Image 1 (cartoon, rainbow, N blue to C red):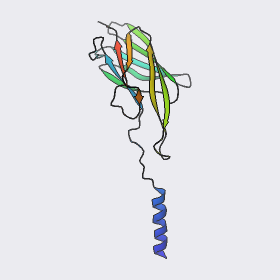
Image 2 (cartoon, one colour):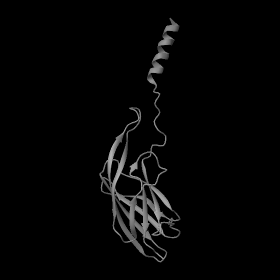
Image 3 (tube, rainbow, N blue to C red):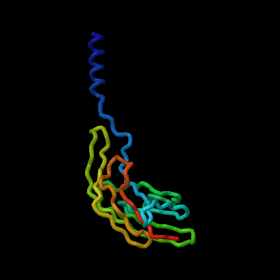
Image 4 (cartoon, rainbow, N blue to C red):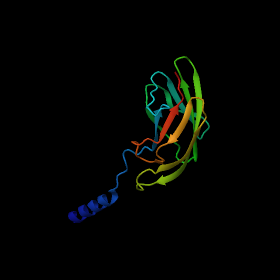
Amino acid sequence: MRKIIGFIFTILAIGACTNIDCPVENRVITVYNLKKANGSTDTLKVDTLTVKTRVADGNDSTLLNRVTGITSYDMNISFTQPEDVFFYTLLDTLGNTYRDTVYVKKENYPHFESVDCQPAYFHKLTEVRTTHHIIDSIVIKRSTVNYDSKNEHFHIYFKARY
């Protein structure tokens, strides 16, 4: 009888487990690479960059706060909004402040690994536009946004500052 009860508990324990693991690296982010007009990598050696966005409750959320010395960065995007709006502020060493607004349109697709895992949203970038105070242009380099954070999604070309 003990063997039968032990066997039943073993079967129940195995049945309660799943063999599908949720992905550990499940951040869905966009990667931005800074470029100069001639195509070479731009480095914010001394200028500081701040990027904010407006969240669903109407408040601003800071995504990058006064970063410097970077050539690229990654940012989260919204899960289900068809367009994200980012507010860029660049402060140079002379005290000049430049502000641009970047608009990113996208299509959102729910992605499910398993019922045991939280759902994620993958995206297809369809359009990007900007005001042109310090940003010369932004180009979509890869339109698919998923768990793969190794690929650059955008190239941002800043205007000459010095």
